[in-house]
Length: 151
Figure 1: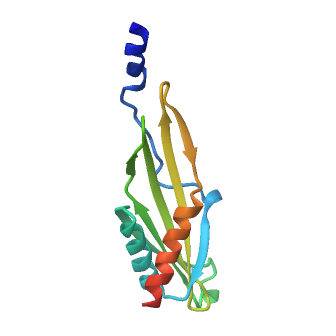
Figure 2: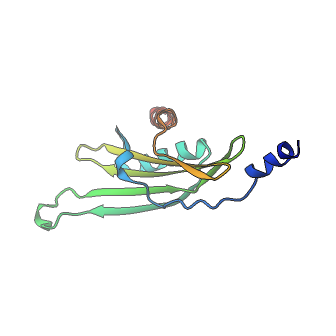
Figure 3: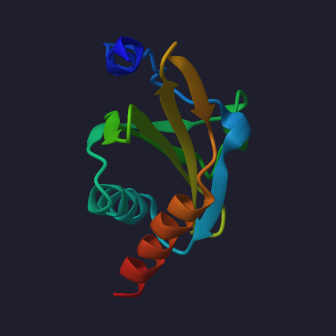
């Protein structure tokens, strides 16, 4: 009987999760939108924040070719990094984050590539379940971007 009273103690404890700031490119979702870079950054940021992710940092850069004479149309890039979001589960907490790459294309469109990472420590030994895919959530974000683009 005492064993059953002590059993919940095996599921209680603290765990430290280390999450990388950048997520592997291998698992990127990509979609093209008819909008300029700044508008795409704004739309992606609003979609993420509307679903509970806080934007931690936005980095902008310009891609150029080595031969500058061929570089008539430079490509502009922006990376959006979110803070780690915690979601309470039954016996544990899920930690998730996004990296978003917004890149201009030659025809006045932009490509928004999203990378997702979720880490869930599983009690009692706190092995980690790592997931790079969340199709439903990504579709929800892309549909919010499309809806806001139509406004």
